[in-house]
Length: 127
Image (cartoon, rainbow, N blue to C red):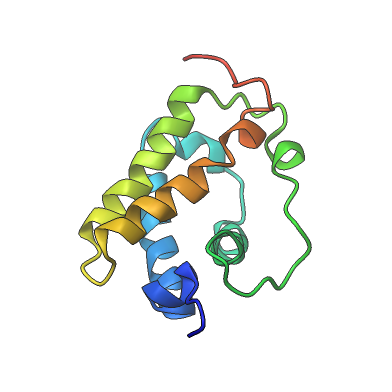
């Protein structure tokens, strides 16, 4: 019996695409997160985020590993910002009917695992 990856359990690329699209709608609607995306090519960012999610959920990896520390360096991201970001993900996962609760928790955990890299390894600043 072969092990099924989290990526496969939730429905693969179709579900990841839908989740990330809904996730970024929430993120961009958040008044404290929106400023981080001003002047950013959102379509490109969303495409990269879909690849990141796929990789984080044991799906196919199509690009080289992401250097999250460099990407987010000097952006002023605080633990509060990151919490808001993760809460947007939790909201989307809670509204997604086709994903088991245990898989939703696993997705959140896997994405939150990268928080130190996003915050610069030192845990960021409170704010």
